[in-house]
Image (cartoon, rainbow over all chains, first blue to last red; front, top):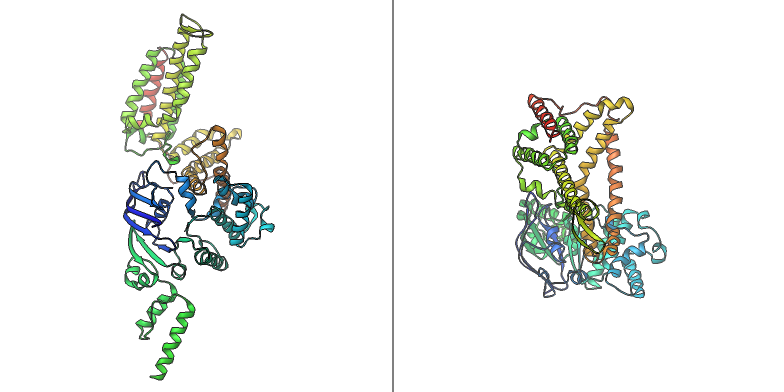
Length: 285
Length: 263
């Protein structure tokens, strides 16, 4: 088991004393692609910060690779090398003079040799589709928003984590940027066999990419299962003020109007095929 | 963490001290600071402390909270004490070792100065504890208004202060976020010697400055698009008003300041 969250409650220690997580139990396996959804304030961001010890919960235990990271003696730096976390608007943490130096910041903190750092930077810049020679000496502050974000994601990838957590990585990107990001995540998941955890408000993204969906509400996990299982719970999702993926929504509405289609489809191609099949089927009958 | 800093942070209560007019409170503080520097005996400090205790009691803020807020200046107080004890000469020699000696005059001035600093900061922190930042800047603007004739940009100054105060929590929150993000990349803010620690702040400070500039730009645009054109002729939502108890407070304080100067 890669990550185990055992009966975790977290209360923010400020004036309002918000209970962000209530008795969460969760197990994440190697090679899963988890999508976490829930509206603002449901505890998603707090949950993922548990995984690399940025937040130590008020009570309960978190284990990464069998090691209890809520224990004070645990070396958190070591844990953070296994669990990479890309925050919301990661481009806001860029600080170095050049793209190269910024991406090298993480590996340098790990104490790697210069050559190793260089190969890693080269490698991850390739992953995020930034040309090494063209970009390595440029200032990250002169890049476009989308490019800045890719530099920031590369900075986390350069740690070579086993698990990559991304908090709303597509927020504020244009359609092309979102598509690029989805391609990157697919590549990391299928080719590099990374475990991925993705927080997103875009249900389409979650439905298309992830192998397991977790729905959070008021600090609790309310639904947990494959995209098919979770998005079949249309009523429950609407009740939580969450949307279905657009495609699924359309299929549901078609079904309500009497066209007997399958509703558990998430991609445009499959949906159009299904609709065409049904329509043709009807012509015959 | 960072957001725990509370030196003189406003605490809303329903008390007579809170209800006093901000201008009066600023004037009172100024009078008492001057009075404090005319005191040259410990009994004067004693008298002053009793007065402050009464004010704290009236303000309905717990004494412990007020004292807790003073924690950051503890270092300053201890430093002052030590400098005086070891460096001020005169009077009887109490203790000596090689070239270091402690003399009675030094101990006396040491404790004297420390009491003065302590009371000074305690009292001024009471001003910010009981007056909301907005009222405070309004008050300062009023007090500075007569100086406009001499070219002091009173309303601009108070607008600057309001904005600065408004953005303290925002920037603290931002700093915490960036800190976490860099920690996730293996940055270490907690260990190492002084120089290493100072260096480790670069990944925090650069993004923080950039975001502060970005916010400043946005704010300037937003103000301009809502036709902000400086302080001339601006009216306000909450006008400051003197009430009878403001004058009573002022009279009490003046009497007190005069009495204290006889100690």
